[in-house]
Image 1 (spheres, rainbow, N blue to C red):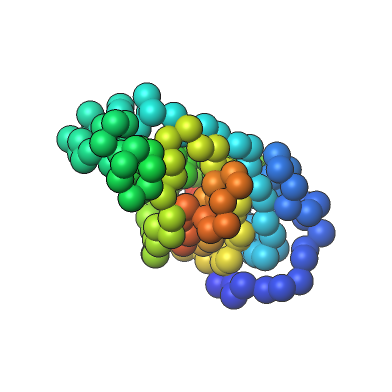
Image 2 (tube, rainbow, N blue to C red):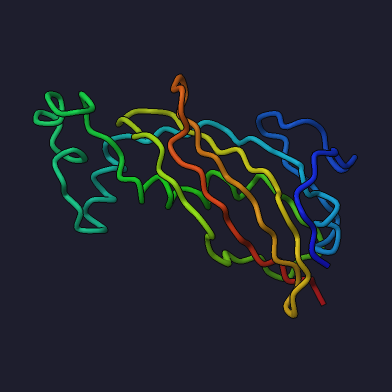
Amino acid sequence: MSTEPTTTEPSITGPATTGTPVRVASPAALADAVGQRATGEWFTVDQARIDAFADATEDHQWIHVDAERAASGPFGTTVAHGFLTLSLLPHLASSLVEVGGVAMAMNYGLDKVRFLTTVPAGSRVRATTEITGAQDVAQGVRLASTVTVEIEGADKPALVAQTLALYVPAA
């Protein structure tokens, strides 16, 4: 079964409040959660994390790691790599959807990602996820969501990603 996004609110969970996940009893019930939203907790992206990501990826561009030079640069401070922010999605969004009766859940990929604004070092970010589709596949249910990473106090989000996850039901 494939579902399209809806504007009606299923009675599976409450409103999209911080820390309140979308909860369903099984992968099969994910179709009923289309249109539901959840918002996560704030998480600080500090310079130590940015530096560690630069080391892990060999991306030591000065806007990320040179505080002195970045102070007079286009952002006035160092900023997180876009891919660092993207790599935080598992942490930021994993607690936003709880599915019972699962043997395994796994990242299935991304359909679209847009980096909309920079994340200055020391900023706090959080994710909001909206379930946009659930499709039965041979292995289980493929869940489509739109995840938005917002920056505390910023007008625009850091990124918006259309994510896919596979939920394999327990035997």
